[in-house]
Image (cartoon, rainbow, N blue to C red):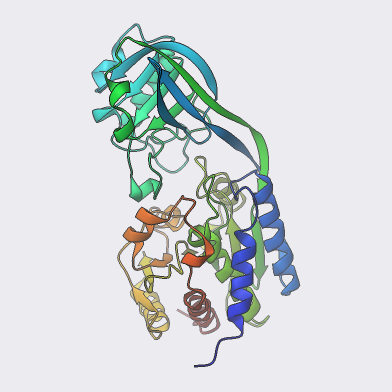
Length: 404
């Protein structure tokens, strides 16, 4: 079977995006280089690309540890958390009622059991909130401990392969915070009232980042095709989500200047950031004009080498849904999969707007083994899957019915 000549192009795009160091977290040097690379590539393909900038918070760490009676307990600093060096008594909190204790100021608070069952929503996350999470965060900040540590393991649905996952990942949280695996936490949980020395070598600062937007045709009647370009700190982000950006670039090279509906190609910058700053900026720029978007098509987690690509649709009328089905099920590598809400299309879907996601059929395996981890490298991507996604998306656009 002949090799598609675009395979080498797709591989070059993927390898380049995954080579920018240290990663592609918003505001970082690697992120800036990545957005510039995508904008330049789109320009070379004949698209008019813009790079609107926005404010964000950047962060770095050199690790952390806790010394307790001469024994070292490994601590993983929470992304976007503050640094600290403190010697203080340990206080172990197991339930929300424990948060009401009046003598937590200056201590090293350790959260476990019902206080550390799932990631806490960031204080100013723009798309949803939790009263329970807000109460925990507010109580911690009011108590003014020297630091907060959480006993966590894995939480693939939101935190991918990270172990331990960060209970608090929030650049607005004003207390240094870190996490410890349950297998390492035994001496810490037995240390109520004992003095410990905690070091978190982390810092955060204000930064700037940018989305990449390329348009063609009538933007008052358009399809927006998006893939997030950013990563979590410390991961090359091949499946999550350089692969999605590769599809955008392939699609840009396939679409002619004559298309029956407007197209917006959006490399959005913030899906893996606690504050979703690129999403907030794009939504602000499109305030009052979201009805112009006939379909918001998001690619995230696609190309995973172990399975087919899976698409899901949200709030499409029967005629449009049937059209999407007819285009995307003609290829053996594409299938209709279950609903998948862990990405940017959920912003549209939760508002009742027409949206579509493309990911992998093995999404649970991918989340558990790759997402947000150093193991998410280009060898985990099968580029032929990306070519098929680009072809199907191009066919969806070029065959779009002028009248619905």
